[in-house]
Length: 378
Image (tube, rainbow, N blue to C red; front, side, top):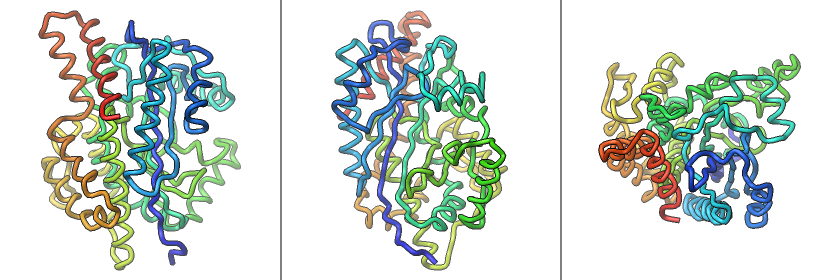
C-alpha cells in the first residue's frame, strides 16, 4: 500500500570542472575567495567537491521541469559570472580533455580526506563530474519498487548524456569514459534489487555495523534511494554540456518514473532483467553512446537507438502531458540529431587536427567548445 502519492518534484545537481581561460587546463589552485563569492550569490546551492578544480551546484526543490530549467540556468549563469572575474570558466562535462588527474589537489574536508584514505588511488583518479537528478517519491516502499524497475532504462539515459570521451589528453574510444573511473570504487554500478525498503535497510545496517560505511550516502549506485531526501536519485548520467539537454533528460527520467508508478496502480509492472543483460547495455552506452543501438531484450537483438527512444516516448506520452513537460521530453530527439557533448567534442578535435593544428591545440579547441556550450541558452 502506498501511503503517499508521489509528488514527482525535481532537484538537479551538477558538477563542473574549472578551467583557466588562457591555458584551458584545470585550475589546480582556484582563488580562496571564489567559493565565498559564489555563496554570496547562491547561498547553500553551491558547494565544493572532491577536487579544488571542481564546483557543484544544486537546484532548489522544483515543482516542475520548467522551474528546474529556470533555476539550473540561474546557477550556471552565476558560476560563469563569478569565475569569469578570475579568468576562469566552468565546463559542464564529465572529464577534462587533457589535464592529468595526478596534478590535481584535493579539497581539505573531512569527508574527502576519509574517502581518499580509504580508496587510495581509486579516489585520487576521480577527476570526473556527474549530473544527479532527484525525483520526489515520498514513500519508502515505492522508492525501492521503482528503483528495481527503472534500472532497465539507465543505459538509455546514459547514452543520451555522454560527455567524457577524452582522458589525460587521449581519445579513449569511449563516449563516457567517466564510468570506467568511477566503477573502480565499491558500491557503484547498477542498483541491487530488494523486495522491500526494510530489506534494503537491513543490508545497509549490516555494512554500517561492520564499520565499512558510516551511512547510505557511501552507496554510489547509478540509481539509489537518497539518504538525505525522500527522493529516488539518478546518478548514471554524465554532465550534459548544454543546459537544454540536461533538462530534456531530467524530464524523461521523471516521466519514466511516473509511467512505472502508473503501471503499478493498474497492477502491472515493467519486467525486470538480470544485471548481466542490463550491464551489457550500460557498457554499450559507455562505448558508443547511441551510435550502435542497444539490446532489446524481448527481441533478443540489437535495435537502433532511435527505435528504442520512440518506444519510450510513446510509453511516457501520457505522463509528459500530465506533468506539463511534453516539449522538454520531445527535445531528447534533438540530442540524436545534434549529437551528445561527446560527439561535439570529438568533432571539434577532428576539425582542428584537419586544419593542421597540433594535438595540444586541438585539445584546447575542445575546451573552447565546452566553454561556449556550457554557457549556451542561459
